[in-house]
Length: 174
Image (cartoon, rainbow, N blue to C red; front, side, top):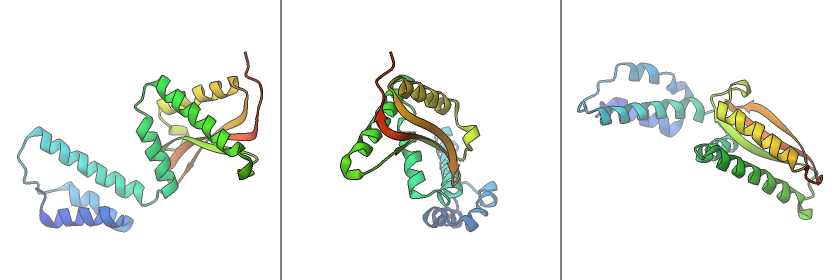
């Protein structure tokens, strides 16, 4: 087990997401007095927990609810095969396009967020993310949509989004 005062401090940091107090976390964990059995599994779990705590504190405090939703959505699907992932994202785009076309919404364009990765810049998205963006671009072009794909970043999160400029679709290219 971790020493009680350290455990309380770490739990308090998680609960409050206090960025100022988070700066003390590396020194707090640098020399932890760990009283655990030296089984590999327990040690690995402790290290994963510490990494998770640090990631939560370093990104969670600056991430808005909207960007957190984007990241969680991407994390849920990114382990699918590339074909399944591409199909899922194209369907997501089609759905966003169709929802925006509803007359009751009165929209002239639509935005669909494809993916989001924390602690990245738009130039450092993962290779998987970049491949998927290119594949989605090709599929939507073939299907005749009027769109652009933007890579951007906000609050420590890099993301890719599709902007359907008009809600009209050209006949599918052969």
